Figure 1 (cartoon, rainbow, N blue to C red):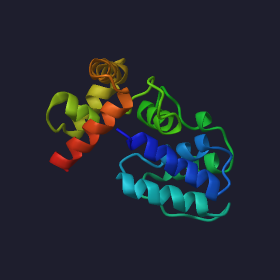
Figure 2: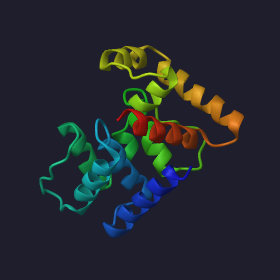
Figure 3: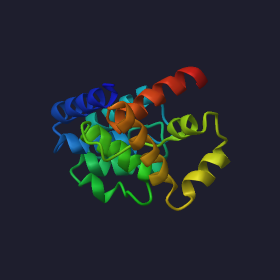
Figure 4: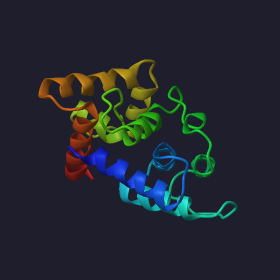
Amino acid sequence: MLWYEKAHCIAGDLSDRFFLASVSHAAGVIAVLSPAVQWEVNCRDAESVCAARKGDDVTVSTYGQFREKAYAIRDGDDPIKWINPRTAPKTYAFWKCIKEPDNAAHVTIDRHALAACFGRLLTDRERSNTLKRVGMYNHFSQVYKDAASVVGILPSQLQAICWIEWRLKHA
C-alpha cells in the first residue's frame, strides 16, 4: 500500500541530498533509469547519477540513452522534456506515481503488471505486441483503475501490490 509513498520519500531524499531542482526531478531520474532494471538497482543507479558531478561518467544498469536523460533531468531540465507519455507511457506513469503518490490518474503498466492481468508469464514478444497496439496501455491502466475502485484503494496501490506479489511468485 505504501510502495509509492516510500518511492516518493526516496526521491525527496535524493532531491535534498544532491540539491536537485525538485522532487519531480529526482523522480524523473529514477523513472528514466528504470527500464529493465530491478528496483534496488534502480535506486542505486539514481543515487549514483545524482551524486555525480557534471561531466562524470557513471555506469548504470539500464540502456545508455536513459543515462543521458537522467543527467539532463538531474541538471535541471524539466522531466517532461525527456519523458514522453506517448512514446514511453510506462516511464511517464512511473515518474508521475513517484512524484504524486496520492494521484489516482496514473498506473505503471510494466511486464509484471501486465502478466498479472493475463494471469501468466508473457513472452517478450507477447508483451511487446500487446502494449504496442494502439490504446492497450490505457486499456490496462483502466483495468487497474476499475479494480482499485472496487476495493477502495488507489490504482497505483493496487498495481504495487500486484507487482510485489507477482514478482515474489514468478521471479
